[in-house]
Length: 138
Image (tube, rainbow, N blue to C red; front, top):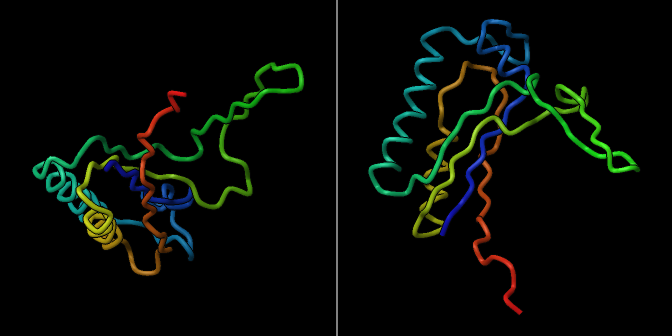
């Protein structure tokens, strides 16, 4: 079964990783960044070696987001950047092909143990099964 494993974050997290921290989002130093990347790379290597990796990506800062909707006439309405009230966004993901929900939960727990600076916010790691049933053939 395929699963989407999602890591959440906020624009302030991206800023903290570049040294622009706040009281709620402490700045990361080079050692902490390396520890985080080493941790995530180890997970990637493990799931790849086990044949469970389908895809994995870290996403660019929310400030680079573009929202596209349509108006009443069906014309596109484009807004750059996240809305001010956006608190948490998708920061990265894995698409994994695992034998069970228990196995993907083990992987999500590894992700959740990622080292971060003391005082950093904690976000849940979200698991969503991917619906591969496709459209009905009625």
